Image (cartoon, helix red, strand yellow):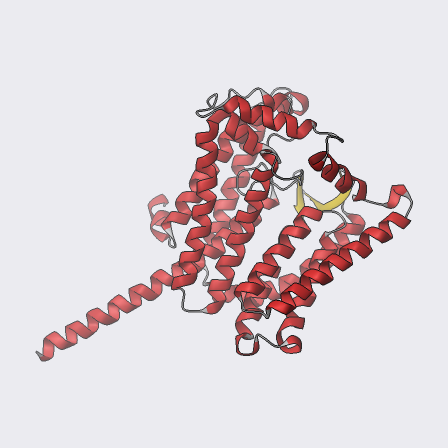
Length: 394
């Protein structure tokens, strides 16, 4: 059974290797960083969170495997419908979502899981842009014919995510701009989209400022985080504890399970898991993890250069850039290069549906890479057939 599954695994072997290594890092880091959480909520059962995380990762691998077995061209119609399901779900989340840290980002699911609807919106928007950019390549420089149909869903998704999650909205907007640029959309339209986004954000903030303080949402959270990052004011506790963890790690680290800052650092298993990894595995381990994400992006670029269909190229680079950009943001926060954002480290931070959507995204990349291998095999078989025919006649 296992041998049959292994023989059925196709696609880019380097991507599979990166995913396995990141998952191993994830299991070790989550087990090490959830000790305090286990004593607080699970009567000292330190295996509880690791086992839960293992099950979520395992299901993520199942989703990845199933996704990579499907030809990527079949994703297009399904995800086009899913985008128009995701948009109402974003609105539903803003109204009825669970209030966590003064923000409604998630909908409750059974088994104490939560569903962050922005994850679905991000993946379906990338799929939508990849499809539309492919369809409109013949008149991609047009305003009404190409730019407007591309711009409307981007702005709609971003401004539904923005009130509860500024960093995710910025990530989605940036990924969309990169896809539009790669898709050869007129640069003046891309810059106009940036301008529209900045003006709309300014208007949104001005409107919030006119409301009573208890209805201003995350506005003061954004302000305090920016102030604590740019000035010697505000709460720097999280950043200071992360920097202590990084300093303690030195080059080779304190070895797995020996972190001390996991007892002081808020969310060491999610937002600041990279700091714990550096503390335990040192600069060497942290640098290796950065390299893994860069390899993932590089393999996406390789896929783009080899895939004959434009849709597959846009799809691969879109999901890869989104994941790697999110990883770099998380790492940038941990080392003090960026203000606190709350973005998890893809496939490493403890989570639920976020890991599953990451797995689906990687499964899409593997599906596209599998198509390259299939085309190359068909070409080899054609050459062999031609050589066999030539040998008969000769």
